Image (cartoon, rainbow, N blue to C red; front, top):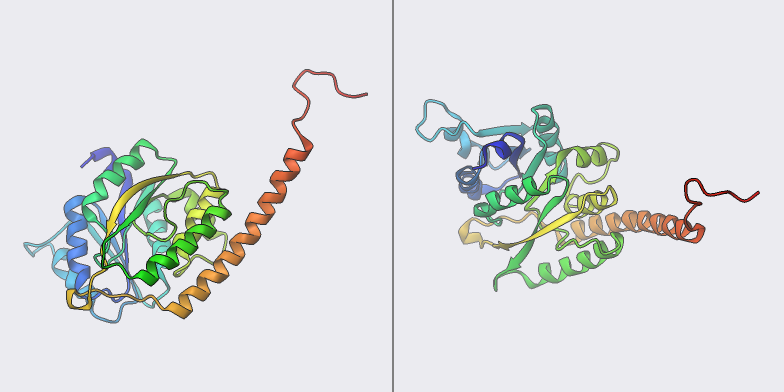
Length: 269
């Protein structure tokens, strides 16, 4: 572990009813990096209690690098990440690596992503998913559509994948963006965050990362609702497309005006 990086970078895991996968996911993250913060987003399945031994100083399983924040009600993934980032910023952290609590994301790649962030602290380090044969075809095709829209909305800035939540964000610009609007609180968070960060001047660095889709027998949990979440994404892209068109018009206006007179050159009389 890079000590200097660990002082300003932490792992942030939002969790809502993650079931049996929460504990091993947190343990794997702790083995790769510390500190790890978990934001329990109003879970009702008792999964947070599986972390109690990791939080008990008298227990041999105690992990001093773990912090758990419990929200009283379910607010959505983006809202949970926002709560964690606000506390992290107050504690002096500058970057967070977000990962899901359901065992899909590769905890062993946390050090590599943190190292890339340390090399390019002004960038967002984005996981680009490598799917196995068990990946649901409908989900894979659906994210291709979302990625097409994001490419358009960012003027092809180079975002490898807009929905894969295994990422390192610089906290300050993302807080500035999120605190200024009421959106980006639920399933729309991942895609809208990368688009608006690009507009903010935060460029992407893409790193391949395998993704696992666990079966129910393995404890896999999915809260994706095809109708509700696709409607949410449709509304998100409508907002972003409007912003894209505004930026496109401004860009064309600047091009049509051309460069101003050079410093010291005589102006037209």
